[in-house]
Amino acid sequence: MSQPIRMSSLTAAPAATFEQPFEMLAACHERVDRMLKLLQRLRDHLARNGADADARKAAQDVMRYFDQAAPQHHHDEELHVFPPLIAQGDPETMALVCKLQQDHLQMEARWGKARKVLAAVAAGEIDALSPDHEGALDVFAAIYAGHIEAEEQLAYPAAVKLLDDGAIAAMGAEMMKRRGVG
Image (cartoon, rainbow, N blue to C red; front, side, top):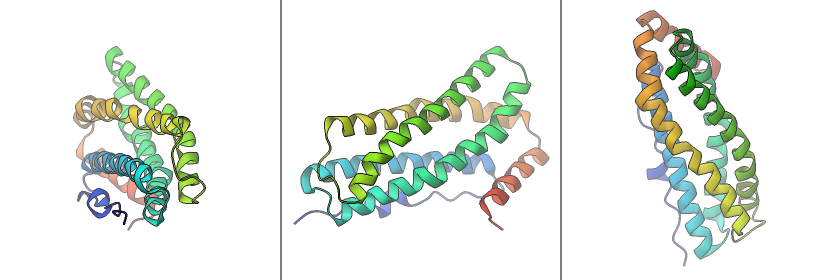
């Protein structure tokens, strides 16, 4: 009998509100981490049990997150975090932002390949991952670690220092509106 992939502990979202948009962005990073852990558990599960119902559901959950929430998160950063950093004109900060923007493009491109693998699992079309499948998932997951660290340790703190309370409130309001919240 196969062990189900326990998703409840991996998908619970940290509490954050749009009134604290930088905390919301950090909470999204925690959800990314949870989804990447779920992806690893899925890979382990597939090796033991194939694309059973639990594997198909986990693949759907990972796809839903990276199809819907992750692009919104990147858009938040492109609209609200990066512009004030660029405007200050510091060469090191501008290089950091350029790298983070390139990461976003790479994430999008790599997600396309990883998504194809997950869609095949979700559809029950493959029971085991080939080396190419594993590679697509590895490359997708690998880009996140350094990216998240750079945002949380460098970009977010620098942007917070540049934005006043009104700008931060406007940022949260725009993020809510774009998501149809409130």
